[in-house]
Image (tube, rainbow, N blue to C red):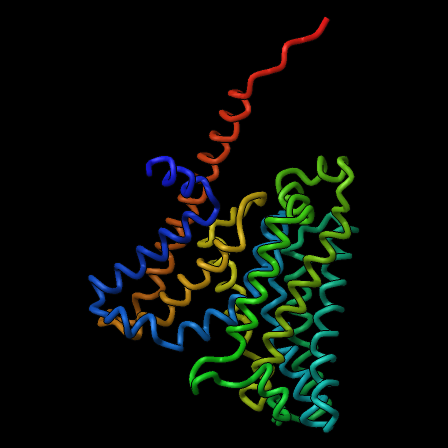
Length: 340
Protein backbone atom coordinates (compact mmCIF):
# COMPACT_ATOMS: atom_id res chain seq x y z
CA UNK A 1 0.00 0.00 0.00
CA UNK A 2 2.83 2.36 0.89
CA UNK A 3 4.58 1.66 -2.41
CA UNK A 4 1.33 2.30 -4.30
CA UNK A 5 0.99 5.71 -2.65
CA UNK A 6 4.60 6.56 -3.46
CA UNK A 7 4.03 5.51 -7.05
CA UNK A 8 1.00 7.81 -7.28
CA UNK A 9 2.88 10.74 -5.77
CA UNK A 10 5.59 10.40 -8.40
CA UNK A 11 3.07 10.94 -11.19
CA UNK A 12 2.41 14.43 -12.66
CA UNK A 13 -1.33 14.24 -11.92
CA UNK A 14 -0.80 13.60 -8.20
CA UNK A 15 -1.11 17.28 -7.32
CA UNK A 16 -4.31 17.74 -9.30
CA UNK A 17 -5.97 14.74 -7.66
CA UNK A 18 -5.03 15.97 -4.20
CA UNK A 19 -6.23 19.48 -5.10
CA UNK A 20 -9.58 18.15 -6.30
CA UNK A 21 -10.09 16.13 -3.11
CA UNK A 22 -9.08 19.12 -1.00
CA UNK A 23 -11.44 21.52 -2.79
CA UNK A 24 -14.42 19.17 -2.53
CA UNK A 25 -13.78 18.53 1.16
CA UNK A 26 -13.39 22.25 1.79
CA UNK A 27 -16.74 23.00 0.13
CA UNK A 28 -18.47 20.18 2.01
CA UNK A 29 -17.14 20.92 5.49
CA UNK A 30 -16.68 24.70 5.35
CA UNK A 31 -19.10 25.73 2.63
CA UNK A 32 -22.06 23.66 3.75
CA UNK A 33 -22.61 22.34 0.21
CA UNK A 34 -24.50 19.14 -0.45
CA UNK A 35 -22.09 16.80 -2.22
CA UNK A 36 -24.80 15.25 -4.38
CA UNK A 37 -26.02 18.66 -5.52
CA UNK A 38 -22.48 19.78 -6.33
CA UNK A 39 -21.52 16.68 -8.31
CA UNK A 40 -24.82 16.66 -10.19
CA UNK A 41 -24.71 20.32 -11.23
CA UNK A 42 -24.38 21.03 -14.94
CA UNK A 43 -22.88 24.50 -14.53
CA UNK A 44 -19.35 23.48 -13.59
CA UNK A 45 -19.30 20.53 -16.02
CA UNK A 46 -20.26 22.77 -18.96
CA UNK A 47 -17.70 25.32 -17.79
CA UNK A 48 -15.02 22.64 -17.53
CA UNK A 49 -15.76 21.19 -20.97
CA UNK A 50 -15.42 24.52 -22.80
CA UNK A 51 -12.29 25.34 -20.84
CA UNK A 52 -10.84 21.83 -21.02
CA UNK A 53 -10.74 21.67 -24.82
CA UNK A 54 -8.57 24.78 -24.78
CA UNK A 55 -6.53 23.83 -21.71
CA UNK A 56 -5.26 20.50 -23.08
CA UNK A 57 -3.31 21.95 -26.06
CA UNK A 58 -2.14 24.87 -23.91
CA UNK A 59 -0.83 22.25 -21.48
CA UNK A 60 0.97 20.41 -24.28
CA UNK A 61 2.66 23.64 -25.31
CA UNK A 62 3.72 24.30 -21.72
CA UNK A 63 5.16 20.78 -21.45
CA UNK A 64 7.20 21.53 -24.57
CA UNK A 65 8.41 24.83 -23.07
CA UNK A 66 6.13 27.21 -25.01
CA UNK A 67 2.97 29.20 -24.25
CA UNK A 68 -0.03 30.40 -26.26
CA UNK A 69 -2.21 33.24 -24.98
CA UNK A 70 -3.75 34.13 -28.34
CA UNK A 71 -6.61 31.76 -27.45
CA UNK A 72 -8.34 34.71 -25.76
CA UNK A 73 -9.02 36.27 -29.15
CA UNK A 74 -9.47 33.06 -31.14
CA UNK A 75 -12.56 31.90 -29.26
CA UNK A 76 -14.62 34.97 -30.30
CA UNK A 77 -12.91 34.78 -33.71
CA UNK A 78 -14.30 31.28 -34.18
CA UNK A 79 -17.75 32.39 -33.07
CA UNK A 80 -17.82 35.46 -35.27
CA UNK A 81 -16.47 33.66 -38.33
CA UNK A 82 -19.19 31.03 -38.05
CA UNK A 83 -21.91 33.63 -37.46
CA UNK A 84 -20.82 36.02 -40.21
CA UNK A 85 -20.45 33.36 -42.89
CA UNK A 86 -23.53 31.28 -42.02
CA UNK A 87 -25.68 33.84 -40.22
CA UNK A 88 -25.10 37.14 -41.98
CA UNK A 89 -24.23 35.85 -45.48
CA UNK A 90 -26.53 32.78 -45.29
CA UNK A 91 -23.88 30.33 -46.41
CA UNK A 92 -24.24 26.66 -45.34
CA UNK A 93 -23.28 26.08 -41.72
CA UNK A 94 -20.52 23.74 -42.89
CA UNK A 95 -18.87 26.69 -44.63
CA UNK A 96 -19.05 28.78 -41.47
CA UNK A 97 -17.57 25.94 -39.41
CA UNK A 98 -14.80 25.35 -41.92
CA UNK A 99 -14.05 29.06 -41.93
CA UNK A 100 -13.76 29.11 -38.14
CA UNK A 101 -11.34 26.18 -38.12
CA UNK A 102 -9.37 27.72 -41.01
CA UNK A 103 -8.85 30.87 -38.95
CA UNK A 104 -7.40 28.69 -36.21
CA UNK A 105 -5.05 26.95 -38.63
CA UNK A 106 -3.85 30.29 -40.05
CA UNK A 107 -3.17 31.90 -36.68
CA UNK A 108 -1.56 28.72 -35.35
CA UNK A 109 0.80 28.63 -38.35
CA UNK A 110 1.75 32.26 -37.78
CA UNK A 111 2.44 31.63 -34.09
CA UNK A 112 4.44 28.50 -34.80
CA UNK A 113 6.50 29.89 -37.67
CA UNK A 114 7.37 33.07 -35.79
CA UNK A 115 8.37 31.02 -32.74
CA UNK A 116 10.78 28.75 -34.60
CA UNK A 117 12.22 31.40 -36.94
CA UNK A 118 12.81 34.20 -34.47
CA UNK A 119 14.36 34.45 -31.02
CA UNK A 120 11.25 36.15 -29.64
CA UNK A 121 9.59 34.17 -26.81
CA UNK A 122 6.27 32.56 -27.70
CA UNK A 123 4.61 34.54 -24.90
CA UNK A 124 5.40 37.80 -26.71
CA UNK A 125 4.51 36.41 -30.14
CA UNK A 126 1.10 35.15 -29.01
CA UNK A 127 0.50 38.37 -27.09
CA UNK A 128 0.97 40.20 -30.39
CA UNK A 129 -1.40 37.88 -32.27
CA UNK A 130 -3.87 38.17 -29.39
CA UNK A 131 -4.04 41.95 -29.73
CA UNK A 132 -3.99 41.78 -33.54
CA UNK A 133 -6.85 39.28 -33.67
CA UNK A 134 -8.90 41.30 -31.20
CA UNK A 135 -8.65 44.31 -33.50
CA UNK A 136 -9.26 42.23 -36.62
CA UNK A 137 -12.37 40.54 -35.21
CA UNK A 138 -13.88 43.81 -33.99
CA UNK A 139 -13.10 45.90 -37.05
CA UNK A 140 -13.97 43.06 -39.43
CA UNK A 141 -17.33 42.47 -37.79
CA UNK A 142 -18.27 46.15 -37.84
CA UNK A 143 -17.04 46.54 -41.42
CA UNK A 144 -18.87 43.49 -42.77
CA UNK A 145 -22.07 43.54 -40.71
CA UNK A 146 -22.19 46.92 -38.99
CA UNK A 147 -22.56 45.21 -35.59
CA UNK A 148 -20.41 43.71 -32.85
CA UNK A 149 -22.79 40.75 -32.51
CA UNK A 150 -24.30 38.52 -35.20
CA UNK A 151 -27.14 35.99 -35.03
CA UNK A 152 -26.86 32.52 -36.55
CA UNK A 153 -29.31 29.63 -36.79
CA UNK A 154 -27.77 26.19 -37.28
CA UNK A 155 -29.59 23.22 -38.86
CA UNK A 156 -30.60 20.27 -36.73
CA UNK A 157 -27.57 18.11 -37.55
CA UNK A 158 -25.18 20.86 -36.49
CA UNK A 159 -27.17 21.49 -33.33
CA UNK A 160 -27.14 17.79 -32.54
CA UNK A 161 -23.35 17.46 -32.94
CA UNK A 162 -22.13 20.78 -31.58
CA UNK A 163 -24.87 22.75 -29.85
CA UNK A 164 -27.46 20.56 -28.16
CA UNK A 165 -28.20 20.32 -24.46
CA UNK A 166 -28.13 16.70 -23.29
CA UNK A 167 -30.90 16.18 -20.78
CA UNK A 168 -31.78 19.84 -21.15
CA UNK A 169 -28.77 21.00 -19.15
CA UNK A 170 -25.45 19.41 -20.18
CA UNK A 171 -23.80 20.75 -23.32
CA UNK A 172 -22.78 18.23 -25.96
CA UNK A 173 -19.29 19.75 -25.96
CA UNK A 174 -18.70 17.64 -22.82
CA UNK A 175 -18.57 14.57 -25.08
CA UNK A 176 -16.08 16.30 -27.38
CA UNK A 177 -13.93 17.20 -24.38
CA UNK A 178 -13.77 13.61 -23.10
CA UNK A 179 -13.02 12.17 -26.54
CA UNK A 180 -10.38 14.83 -27.15
CA UNK A 181 -8.72 14.11 -23.79
CA UNK A 182 -8.64 10.36 -24.48
CA UNK A 183 -7.09 10.81 -27.94
CA UNK A 184 -4.47 13.34 -26.83
CA UNK A 185 -3.74 11.30 -23.72
CA UNK A 186 -3.02 8.25 -25.86
CA UNK A 187 -0.78 10.23 -28.20
CA UNK A 188 1.14 11.89 -25.35
CA UNK A 189 1.70 8.83 -23.19
CA UNK A 190 1.69 5.91 -25.64
CA UNK A 191 3.40 7.15 -28.81
CA UNK A 192 6.79 8.49 -29.83
CA UNK A 193 5.30 11.95 -30.31
CA UNK A 194 4.71 12.18 -26.59
CA UNK A 195 8.31 11.19 -25.90
CA UNK A 196 9.45 13.87 -28.32
CA UNK A 197 7.28 16.43 -26.55
CA UNK A 198 8.75 15.70 -23.13
CA UNK A 199 12.24 15.74 -24.61
CA UNK A 200 11.61 19.18 -26.11
CA UNK A 201 10.48 20.50 -22.75
CA UNK A 202 13.51 19.02 -20.99
CA UNK A 203 16.15 20.32 -23.39
CA UNK A 204 15.13 21.55 -26.83
CA UNK A 205 18.68 21.71 -28.19
CA UNK A 206 19.47 18.16 -27.15
CA UNK A 207 16.14 17.00 -28.57
CA UNK A 208 16.96 18.61 -31.91
CA UNK A 209 20.43 17.08 -31.91
CA UNK A 210 18.85 13.69 -31.25
CA UNK A 211 16.89 13.98 -34.48
CA UNK A 212 13.52 15.03 -33.06
CA UNK A 213 11.68 17.36 -35.52
CA UNK A 214 11.29 20.13 -32.95
CA UNK A 215 10.23 22.76 -35.48
CA UNK A 216 7.44 20.68 -36.95
CA UNK A 217 6.30 19.62 -33.51
CA UNK A 218 6.19 23.24 -32.34
CA UNK A 219 4.14 24.37 -35.34
CA UNK A 220 1.74 21.43 -34.92
CA UNK A 221 1.20 22.28 -31.23
CA UNK A 222 0.42 25.92 -31.98
CA UNK A 223 -2.00 24.92 -34.74
CA UNK A 224 -3.71 22.46 -32.38
CA UNK A 225 -4.04 25.15 -29.72
CA UNK A 226 -5.49 27.73 -32.11
CA UNK A 227 -7.90 25.29 -33.79
CA UNK A 228 -9.12 24.08 -30.40
CA UNK A 229 -9.94 27.67 -29.43
CA UNK A 230 -11.84 28.40 -32.64
CA UNK A 231 -13.66 25.08 -32.27
CA UNK A 232 -14.93 26.15 -28.84
CA UNK A 233 -16.03 29.48 -30.28
CA UNK A 234 -17.81 27.72 -33.14
CA UNK A 235 -19.68 25.45 -30.71
CA UNK A 236 -20.73 28.44 -28.60
CA UNK A 237 -22.13 30.23 -31.65
CA UNK A 238 -24.15 27.17 -32.65
CA UNK A 239 -25.38 26.60 -29.10
CA UNK A 240 -26.42 30.19 -28.32
CA UNK A 241 -27.51 31.12 -31.87
CA UNK A 242 -25.33 34.23 -31.79
CA UNK A 243 -21.75 35.45 -31.57
CA UNK A 244 -20.04 38.48 -30.05
CA UNK A 245 -16.61 40.00 -30.58
CA UNK A 246 -15.74 39.72 -26.88
CA UNK A 247 -15.83 36.97 -24.29
CA UNK A 248 -12.65 34.93 -24.62
CA UNK A 249 -10.12 36.78 -22.48
CA UNK A 250 -10.94 34.89 -19.29
CA UNK A 251 -9.94 31.66 -21.01
CA UNK A 252 -6.28 32.72 -20.96
CA UNK A 253 -6.03 32.92 -17.18
CA UNK A 254 -8.41 30.02 -16.61
CA UNK A 255 -6.55 27.67 -18.96
CA UNK A 256 -3.13 28.43 -17.49
CA UNK A 257 -4.42 27.94 -13.93
CA UNK A 258 -6.08 24.65 -14.90
CA UNK A 259 -2.88 23.41 -16.52
CA UNK A 260 -0.68 24.37 -13.56
CA UNK A 261 -3.13 22.87 -11.07
CA UNK A 262 -3.09 19.81 -13.33
CA UNK A 263 0.58 19.22 -12.59
CA UNK A 264 2.33 20.87 -15.55
CA UNK A 265 5.49 22.77 -14.67
CA UNK A 266 5.97 26.26 -16.09
CA UNK A 267 9.52 25.27 -16.95
CA UNK A 268 8.31 22.42 -19.19
CA UNK A 269 9.14 18.74 -19.46
CA UNK A 270 6.65 17.50 -16.85
CA UNK A 271 2.89 16.93 -16.98
CA UNK A 272 0.08 14.64 -18.12
CA UNK A 273 -3.28 14.85 -19.87
CA UNK A 274 -4.99 13.18 -16.92
CA UNK A 275 -3.60 15.88 -14.68
CA UNK A 276 -4.80 18.66 -16.99
CA UNK A 277 -8.23 17.02 -17.17
CA UNK A 278 -8.52 16.79 -13.38
CA UNK A 279 -7.03 20.26 -12.95
CA UNK A 280 -9.72 21.69 -15.22
CA UNK A 281 -12.42 19.98 -13.17
CA UNK A 282 -10.87 21.34 -9.97
CA UNK A 283 -10.77 24.89 -11.30
CA UNK A 284 -14.34 24.61 -12.61
CA UNK A 285 -15.63 23.43 -9.24
CA UNK A 286 -13.89 26.31 -7.48
CA UNK A 287 -15.22 28.85 -10.00
CA UNK A 288 -18.78 27.57 -10.28
CA UNK A 289 -19.23 25.39 -7.20
CA UNK A 290 -18.87 28.31 -4.84
CA UNK A 291 -22.38 29.39 -5.88
CA UNK A 292 -23.68 26.22 -4.21
CA UNK A 293 -22.02 27.06 -0.89
CA UNK A 294 -22.61 29.53 1.88
CA UNK A 295 -19.24 31.16 1.19
CA UNK A 296 -19.17 34.78 0.04
CA UNK A 297 -18.59 34.85 -3.73
CA UNK A 298 -15.84 37.44 -3.27
CA UNK A 299 -13.63 34.79 -1.68
CA UNK A 300 -13.46 32.69 -4.84
CA UNK A 301 -10.39 34.48 -6.21
CA UNK A 302 -8.58 34.01 -2.91
CA UNK A 303 -9.33 30.28 -3.03
CA UNK A 304 -8.06 30.10 -6.62
CA UNK A 305 -4.88 31.98 -5.69
CA UNK A 306 -4.11 29.72 -2.74
CA UNK A 307 -4.89 26.65 -4.84
CA UNK A 308 -2.56 27.86 -7.63
CA UNK A 309 0.33 28.57 -5.26
CA UNK A 310 -0.12 25.22 -3.53
CA UNK A 311 -0.23 23.43 -6.88
CA UNK A 312 3.02 25.04 -8.04
CA UNK A 313 4.79 23.96 -4.85
CA UNK A 314 3.37 20.44 -5.02
CA UNK A 315 4.24 20.03 -8.69
CA UNK A 316 7.87 20.90 -8.07
CA UNK A 317 8.02 18.54 -5.10
CA UNK A 318 6.45 15.67 -7.06
CA UNK A 319 8.83 16.25 -9.96
CA UNK A 320 11.82 16.08 -7.63
CA UNK A 321 10.38 12.89 -6.12
CA UNK A 322 9.99 11.35 -9.58
CA UNK A 323 13.50 12.38 -10.62
CA UNK A 324 15.06 11.02 -7.43
CA UNK A 325 13.27 7.70 -7.96
CA UNK A 326 14.47 7.57 -11.57
CA UNK A 327 18.06 8.29 -10.56
CA UNK A 328 17.87 5.64 -7.86
CA UNK A 329 16.52 3.09 -10.34
CA UNK A 330 19.35 3.84 -12.75
CA UNK A 331 21.97 3.45 -10.05
CA UNK A 332 20.47 0.19 -8.78
CA UNK A 333 20.70 -1.53 -12.16
CA UNK A 334 23.72 -3.86 -12.03
CA UNK A 335 26.25 -3.37 -14.78
CA UNK A 336 27.29 -6.29 -16.89
CA UNK A 337 30.86 -7.45 -16.31
CA UNK A 338 33.41 -6.30 -18.84
CA UNK A 339 34.49 -9.05 -21.16
CA UNK A 340 38.20 -9.21 -21.89
